[in-house]
Image (tube, rainbow, N blue to C red; front, side, top):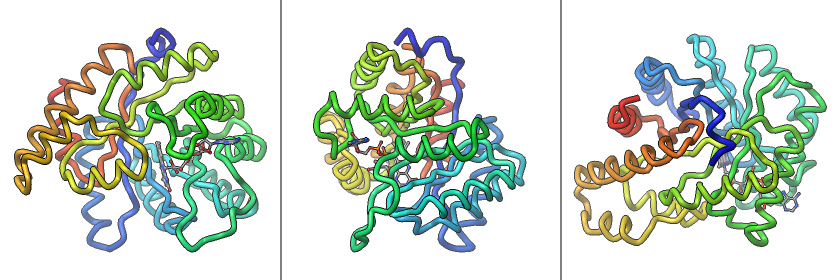
Length: 281
Ligand code: FAD
């Protein structure tokens, strides 16, 4: 963990672009409340295959105009260089300085991979087109990406993104801090020392979490799963237990020197705020 201790911790929250006018209004309130915690930035996800391209753009510009730093996620799979170039230029025009650069996943039914195959190619393209304008974040997987050939290859592929010009990384969420600590040690052994900020998923809904974790390869440890299952539909108990477990996880990560936390807020204030308060941040 030595490489991470040199960075002062920074905190950020992730949103998804709202689909309705009502959702957009709600997000403004969420943003104002979480904004009071003075996060480094808010990031906004990008739908698979560019399905939310306009929504991501509008949400990012709105956040930026409200006086916060906003970082769009940008996935390259299925896209063209020209499309990415235009989007980058629009972000530059709107004063955006940070981008979360991803490969993304092909939406079902879409066949054409486009002009990019992997995120390292997108990072290299952003650097070639825009120099040092953007702070580039990339994704990291302490429990390894589900499509990776093996753990070693995945680590080497992560390094490719750093060599292509990534400044820092945000991890997929995890509930086992050892997975993160080992990942950092492996990175250090490969001379990868950029800040790797743990992505934090508050637990509020077990069914949704289980489905999502299966898809993205994040493990819910058995002892957590069994307890969550035992609460059935009792959402208050799920939340209370989840808050406790995730607060403990965050505490351990920060104590060990993690360079901040990135909250997957799901466009809600309370779950992230509760953890924040427990940590006494
Ligand atoms: P890559 O880094 O390209 O890796 C993908 C896979 O390919 C890995 O298995 C890797 O080992 C392998 N690989 C990489 N490079 C090579 C290479 N050169 N040769 C051979 N194999 C290679 N998805 C969205 O749709 N929208 C979002 O907004 C979004 N935000 C995210 C934010 C974070 C912080 C994280 C962790 C994930 C996010 N995702 C998002 C999910 C992400 O798009 C998927 O996990 C996707 O499958 C991989 O994207 P990547 O950028 O990590 O891909």
